[in-house]
Length: 609
Image 1 (cartoon, helix red, strand yellow):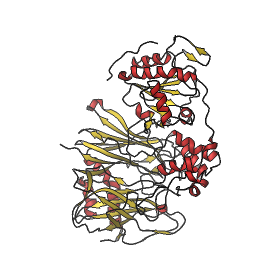
Image 2 (cartoon, one colour):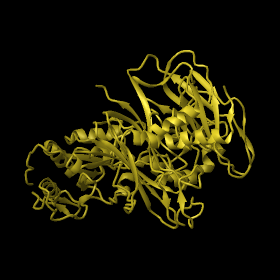
Image 3 (cartoon, one colour):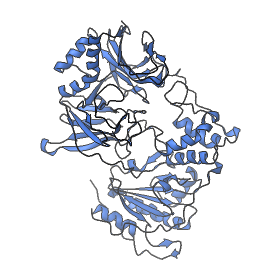
């Protein structure tokens, strides 16, 4: 085996007068745009073709240390990432295990990462950890007891190695070398294929041989007949789904016990298998976000297998206790202050309902700082969205709208938002939004009738900071209202950009489109004027209007003065979009769901001087 070279690499009334409606509509719609221009932004349509949606090579598995390890995340900062699949039941794997441990150590200081996947049937952390220790494997060891990870990457035999470059392009697949195989062993290897592939990537030259046969035993999946709700399914649902799938929350059904879940087993398997649930749409190759809603490949396999095997309940003695939520329906916990609409809003059974605006005076008697906000409609089924717009003390909605003309409006996004599927608005420790004495809120309410007349009386809950925060959270929106989406266009693409005059720290990104929206991307644009470089911050290749997320970078992204955020939105106005109201018409900016929007909201902090 050739030796790797070591290197360092671098009052409260509804607003119904037409003039008032027009003014506040301008506030809600144009405010972020005005803010963008006031602070150096621009909008422009972009005729660039949309990129195809390609699922990245990825694994998400539990490790022997009890953490969840993502291949895409592990590859960050490395020039190459090797993934080696071993099975403790395979003699060839056992022979290669010490060599894998040695290679991982030898290449550690060349920025080549190694991941070892133990795909022994029903393997657990204790056994896998012991196996790794016995063979001096110090690289992260991932558990793949049902071959979910192997199947995801198309690995069929043990002792198979894969090598990826930083863009997750596969460089090599196959045997580590030719020393051990099912046919027999040799004293020494004569072809060190994995090492040669690594060396080629370090030298930025093509790999001579990109594929060989996996030398180990064929990997056979564990039958799903052993899977039961009480032992295997309930822990997954309680851990990943119960927060939303319970009474009073955004999930359409409860999934706390067997009677809740058994009839939904095929649907659960389908939506999880398609990646629609949990509702997390960020491409894992870009960014690291707090509170990611993802489940492991093994959990996906277990849910699918349970459904296929008849959705058995299992031993009652193994039934775990369902989680208890002491929040009276508030996902963030009991609020310190609840601000509600002063009267019930009637929503008709059908037709188009114009935006409604309701001014609410919460009678704030002293300045307070808010760290968490949650808007809770009482009729989620007909609520398209709610925006809580902040009216500072002494200001009126007319004055606010007038401020748009001269760009003097600060914090033009919203105070809080509720859209389908979104969770509470939460700000980092040591930060908060200022709620001034005498301030009011203007609620923008958008209802979409669903065939049954109903009522709504939305509430907004606030949780205050325990002490005055050091930094104030601000919200802005990056817009393009120049939307002219052609009929039958599957990939109409538009961009907008916002430059920062002062340094900022980015807290969150929140993309918003309507039902023709198909993809959304945020990029950092930085560098000298003639050498601007775009770096992806967030890529949502499959936007889902029904489940809209906040994406909170961890740690926060810092932007220097002069840096910008560019957003790119893609719309599918074709017949292939099953949510499309009419693919044969031009579509422009508008309030209603059958029209479109393009907003890249951001929460941010002005950086300390």
